[in-house]
Amino acid sequence: MSDPTSPRNVPVLDLVGAIRLDPEFRMEDVLRALDSMTPEELEELATLLDEHEAAVRRRARLLAS
Image (cartoon, rainbow, N blue to C red; front, side, top):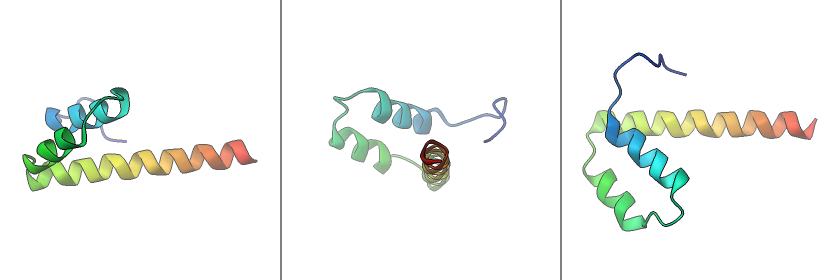
């Protein structure tokens, strides 16, 4: 994962956190947030989601063995 002391764009982290933690987070909020992101923020979001998916798969393999 990335260095926790490095600066991060707050909108990406807010979006990921809101989607994961708020069951009432509406799809239009997601779309509005995605629409307002820069290409760099979208790339960061994609990286975070890829890292999360890889972690979930690793955990599933560990639990299955």
